[in-house]
Image 1 (spheres, rainbow, N blue to C red):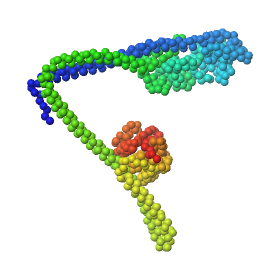
Image 2: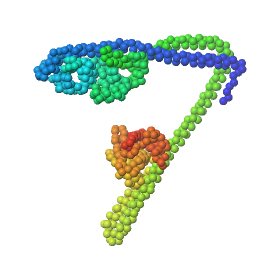
Image 3: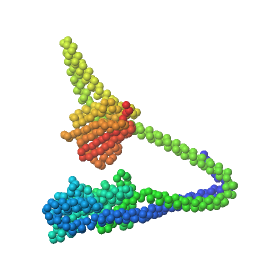
Length: 620
């Protein structure tokens, strides 16, 4: 088609139109830039304002939580001070009489019931507990040695101590507040009150926002998430970790780091983090810090940010669009009106010619695009057909390569029964000449059995050499495994003893083509046996597992494993660790499995390699 030429007297119409298009392109580009920039600014402002508002709201909540924690701490702190001056405590420590200790046990039992303390107990100067509020319970502290505890040693040396630890008897965490009884020169013992924070932690859990308290090493002591207890909120030096573990302060806790990642500092008391909570995926949180007065502890409070930030950003974007879109619409209206006024006369003079020119131009463009698209479609179809042919040829080449490897051994397998047949035939002739039909009949039966064996071997070879049907059909899995072993028997006759086969259930069928599925198993069996050549402890385990929809064939060897450099690209063409291999066997096996809706998985290590072939289970 010939492109029409604009009529000279209407050329100015085209010029005006081109200028108008350029103006609209510039206007559209500037509008798009303005919208993108405004939305980006709205997002930044929305995030910042949302975080600031969230921090302000949550700061008051964190302060309240610190106040409640202080209330739990402060009330029982006076108990050791009072008991250290109590005459009955002096009597119990100074006297060896049972009556004094019994009186002290009962006193401690009464006191603990009216306080928030979990246990009150008195320890002698040798570290052995002589009296306890839980003296009636199976986990009584009486008689236990606490001389190794930090709160006991520091109380003896310094007069007072506070120490958070896991109970050596109760196995429950708590804060131990201790005070020396007697003077530093002549200590009589130590009074200890243990605080537990179960009720406080339960209140925190009800709020559904993670809260935890850390000590000066960053170890989590009190938490609304039980699995986070005794984890670390910050890296702890190795020497400190060793000292903590040796002191048994937290039992055998591994002191692993909390699942909190990528902190982005906002200020000294807040940061944005990503965290993984039990039972949920990774999410973003605002983490607030608040010191706990009178202790070296720090309360950390996690507030979810995804929903508030998303809501704030959405509102700011809507507000931005509500302001910006009318402004752009007014600008477009004014620009359009100006262009209409400028082009009115030119459009009226050249409307018909301009319309015909545009229609012709668009028609030609569409025709060229259609022809080009048809050509590309044809090229794609031809390429796809060539790829399918190449893939089939590769599969057949791999099959014939395997066939060549086992051909020599199969010839040996056939020669043996042929020689035996000759001997049986000679014997039968002699028996017939002697008029002995029964022995002759037995020899002929043996000859028939041997020919059947030869026929089985040659049929497997003929079937394997032919190109397998690509259509999926139900195939007996036992036949596939037996066929693969028949073809490998001659080449690996000395190694097949290493195979430990747990055959599939009788009648178990999979979808595929027997010859092509045999090709997969031959490749995998052959790889496993070759990896074990020369090993006295060679072992290959073959097992089958089934589900309602799938059958998994596992081939596991105890060979040296696959090098990591090769394992990552094991199913890439021409990737092999064999000197004479082409690196196509596994690639083709994977493609065959995929053709029938299956897959091949591999894992490898120093103890061997395991391949798992997943195939679709045939319906009964």
